[in-house]
Image (cartoon, rainbow, N blue to C red):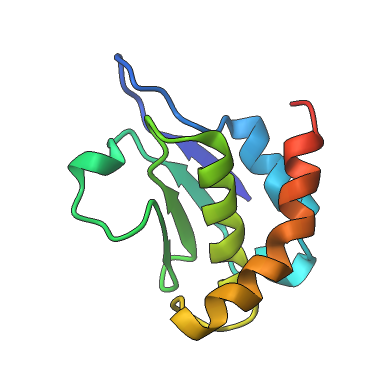
Length: 118
């Protein structure tokens, strides 16, 4: 899988590094990651976008785009895991009724990620 980092020259910085994104993908089940061929750490600041969430998946290009600049590491890691779980479970978009189920599903991976030193 290819990980691309958008270039920028000023703060705020990304909440996740390239190594941390790679670690997240190593922790999750294989079926969660197989639908993603590339990850883009966007140079755009999430607050300045009109997106509903900081992690967006495009099925046609199999690209996961992460808008993490200026956000909290744990929150972004959680959002990435939620998106991967949704993709892997073929939920497509997050259903409010499924949110609790997905939270329970990703909890062990989030705990491992937060304990790891990258």
